[in-house]
Image (cartoon, rainbow, N blue to C red; front, side, top):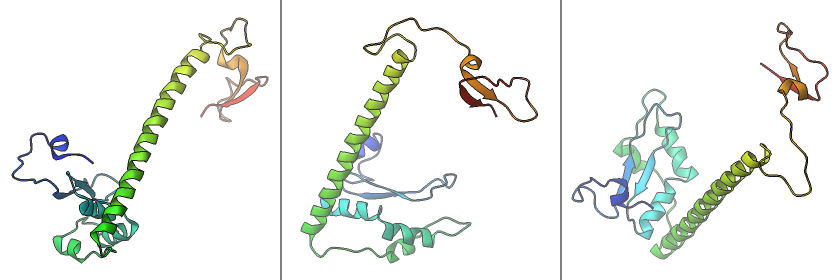
Length: 173
């Protein structure tokens, strides 16, 4: 989770205190009008509340309150929302810890996928240009026009570039 200093380096620490819950106002130009909750240096019970704001139960209530033309949630609306709340801090802490661990795992997997995509992109650059060859293959690559290897078809009224004997169908819109 972000720290106060990471998110707002110029913020006055008197205005925002450690473990404050901040509900951001959303930009109505976005299609997704869900509020974003940030928790700065929060303790485990507050992380539990953070995850509650990501739950279907709370998001359904938020969507029901938001009007079709005026998208706002008042303090009164916020106070009326219902959440399911464990009776002990220990259970809230355990749930928050488990969900935080899941978020950390997802983040690390996202980073791994991004790294693998970069590796694939590099491999494509080398393999598809002939710079690097797979073992067991040799011979020169030749430069060909797309029309020589693909069957290019255009719309019915635009037939001047139509080729019937290509090896692969190719459609131009």
